[in-house]
Length: 271
Image 1 (tube, rainbow, N blue to C red):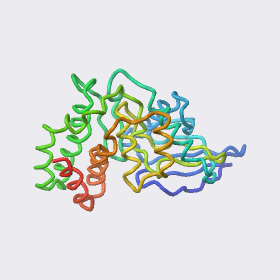
Image 2 (image 1 turned 60 degrees about the vertical axis):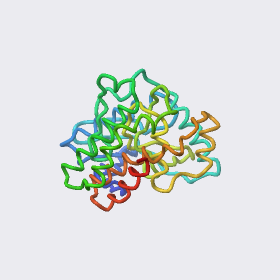
Image 3 (image 1 turned 180 degrees about the horizontal axis):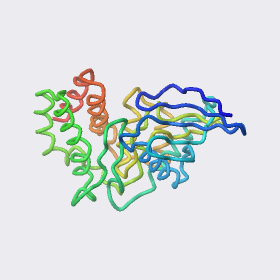
Image 4 (image 1 turned 30 degrees about the vertical axis):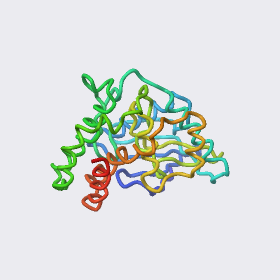
C-alpha cells in the first residue's frame, strides 16, 4: 500500500510525498509532460551531483511525465549553515568546462533556457550571455506583448555596451545552479544545504551569486565565506544587476507587467 500527500511550494509542477509499503519515502514531481522539463531537471541534478560539492536529491526514476527523487527530510537552520553553504557553493563553481552553455537546452522555471552555444558564443561570455539569456527573453517579451518601448530602446543600446559592462570578470566557464534563490535550496535533517530545482549550465559564477541576491539575498556570512574560499574579481557587486536582469525578464514573461518597471530600471542603470 502507498500513502500519498501533497507538498506545497511549486507553481509549475505538482509535487507529492509517497510512502511505500516498505516505509520508504519518495518525492514525486509531475504535471510537466508536454515540455520534457522533468528529464532536463534530472540531467541537471546529475550534473550537480557529479561534482560532490553540494548535496542534491538522488534521481531514482524519470519519465516524460514524472520524476521520482529521494525524499529528504527538512532540518533546522544551524549557526554555521550559511558559512558552510558559501564555501560549498564556491567549490561547485570550480567545476569547469571548455565552453559556455550546456550539452542541451533546459528550463528556467517554465521558460525554455537556451544553452546550445554556437561559434564565438562558446568562448565569449558577454556574447553568450547577451544572445542566449537577454536577447532570448526580450524576443519572448515582444511575443508575449509585455515589451515596453523603454525596454526595447534600452536593449538596442545594450548590445554595444555589454562587453564593457562585463569587463574584468573573465574566467573559465564554471558549473552554475542557474536559478538559486531561497526557494531552491533546503536544509536537510543533518543541517547540510541541499540544492533543488536547477537550471544548470556552464557560465560565470557571478551570475549565480547575483540570482541569490534578487529576492533579498542570503545571510552576509554566505558571501563572506564564498569570497574567502574563492575571491571574486573586483567589481562583481556592480555587475550583479546585469545578471538580475535575466531573471526579472523571465518573471516578466512568466507573470506579467508587474515586473516591467524593475526590468527597465535594471537595464537603464547601465545605459
